[in-house]
Length: 265
Image 1 (cartoon, rainbow, N blue to C red):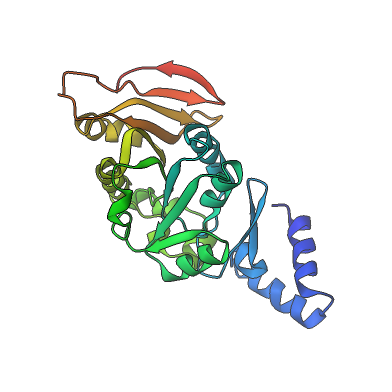
Image 2: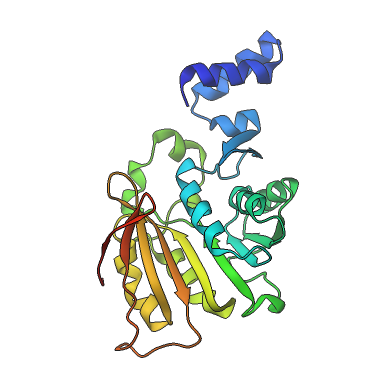
């Protein structure tokens, strides 16, 4: 966001109170996330309430939302893991108003925030808090989990490291620790033909290939940004787990809605 836009938003927040404005500006100058100061943030055309300490959704995740909407039946069921403020769940719900969409999050602050935003949230780690009634009935699982490799954490913006918990971002040595748990847990809940969509980075789609194959995922595709960097992974769960020599997922790189290349990894 441009400095002029931030200044305008802070002026609106202060409501003409110069003392309050000075305090707001001081908070921003320390690097505190603007969304925490304002109490809300834009995401995919929505205005999302954001409480201090809750993960702020990034615009890069909107592609994940659009692909999720394309895979979710009008009256389907979806789970948003690590829902945070519930931004993704809300954006998907807007496009699929008759669908059942729930979130999970381990952070009680995030759970309260998402519920304030109107999202049904189960508090707990990933799939753990979900009722058994969801098993093998879910059409779509979407997740933005921590996926930054520990060794790359220092590359995050200084303000991010100063204010936001490392658990928002740190995905372990290769950034895949939580991603692998999601890949492993999703088949228990997805119906045959259901989709798993993950936000990823670096070479993580290739790192997840063997696990996806062994668990029976097919029709795998990864999409990239304009610079050619991986940003997401989409996979479909089959009825059973194929042998390693059958139905090998072909993970194509997709960008701007087009398949740029398709190759096994």
